[in-house]
Length: 138
Image (cartoon, rainbow, N blue to C red):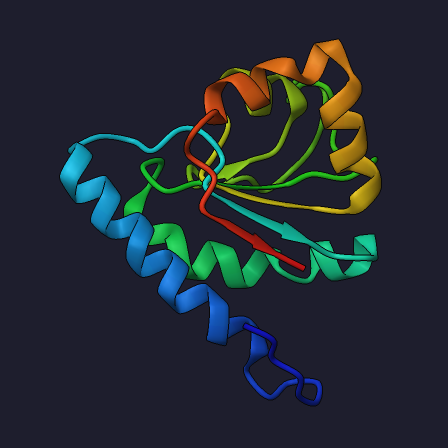
């Protein structure tokens, strides 16, 4: 599907609502927290990645840590230790957690995706997500 429209016209909702619906259904079937990347959102700029934080927090907050997301870019810290952030249970805010318990929603850019595919340290993200990826949105 290709959606082209002006800024603020609802493009994100166009793809996010069906994806969240599917994740909620998977969570209900599984009766537990979803792990492994199932939806990969690729944005060209870190500013666009960061602009999704409040929207994703609002859409996933009622599920606590069962349906989580991560905004993964070059500024994502290795660990939470020593970093000030306003994380919520539904947001993965550090690389260590991303590697050990990848969330079902990963928002990143092409550079970080490339690193993820070639760096040995990031291999657990792919291993935990094997066979689970259903959506790539760019």
